[in-house]
Image 1 (tube, rainbow, N blue to C red):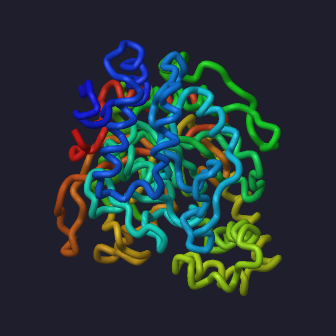
Image 2 (cartoon, helix red, strand yellow; image 1 turned 90 degrees about the horizontal axis):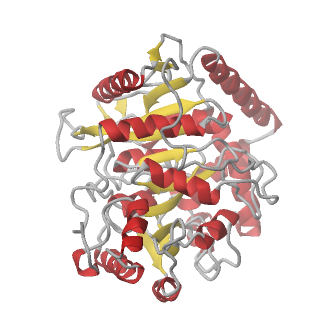
Image 3 (tube, rainbow, N blue to C red; image 1 turned 90 degrees about the vertical axis):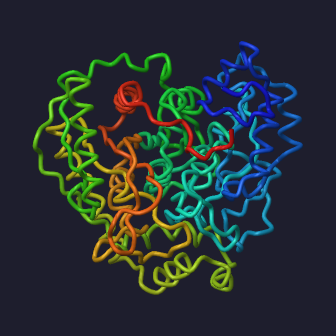
Length: 477
């Protein structure tokens, strides 16, 4: 393990870095310099703004007795930080600067974290890719030519790529889980409302959950301990629960029932990914004494209407900049805005609500019989970083248009869901044969509302029995 900044950044989890600070093995100041050096040297394009001098000032007062005391943290580009760019990865807001911060951010800083800069995201968080007009392509820490996913792609790239030990993320349709799975990280989407979204939180469409991109289960639990809990500026935020890290591994899961459904009954999943998920689910069941049951899982398609319904919030934010700003927008966002402006109406809004009700009833029916649903997080490993929305291998879609079928359902109904690294597979080449460096595969487990702690214990069991690499093989050492 590195002991000075000349050896490169810390390559274990954030919690162990705090331990190293407390023991004197490492100092917050030298760790910050190691991270800043790695960010400057990196070709991943994971950071779009680095607050070098501000971070150096903060680290002078680092207190390692705090939960994240002295830990350098990447902040997702969509999260406002006073004085930092607040572009939301869009040329439409290229000159905007943030004047406020979110409650969870203030709690994180109060717990000793040292924000070092902004990690790239997809424009307005609207796509699960890592390409924008504003910042270009962000590469995957495992292979810079592959996508880091989105919208928290830069956060995952930075953490898996060894630039910072932890970074913030958000998940409105898979934006924590998708990039975490592509990058070999632990990605937790909590129950809706677990971490508050205020101030100035958008109420509709009630799909967005905040969290982090992390290397370990205990880092997620510590993030929960620090950031979760009710805030009056998010009326749908949940009451604070104590002891997330303290209680890890303490829940009796023996006899709990799980159903393995790699494709959730609706996605097109690469066959060897599905095989890996079945094997990983069966191994986890054996580890913990879970009962595997056969329950039909066929979550409904959510349709283009749902995507267009989400764009109303973007129109609210753009205000009178739209439609004149259309040339500044990513092609897919511009197309969606135009389509929604011309075709979204009361009838379509009604269909959106019908779909939400159907999704909730279908999910609830599964949980009447099962405690957990085990599925793939992504249909395939990370696809090429620069592609659009239409990549296929033969007749199988493997690009971003197929990812959301696996992750969006948990957002629509608010269930907690975690993505756990379970191995690697080589990507599929144009001739539909394996090619290139093996890339991470994530297993997604969906649980009942409010049972986040059980999902963390499931992830902990995998981490203990079949530990995953904390960083990508090419991370700076």
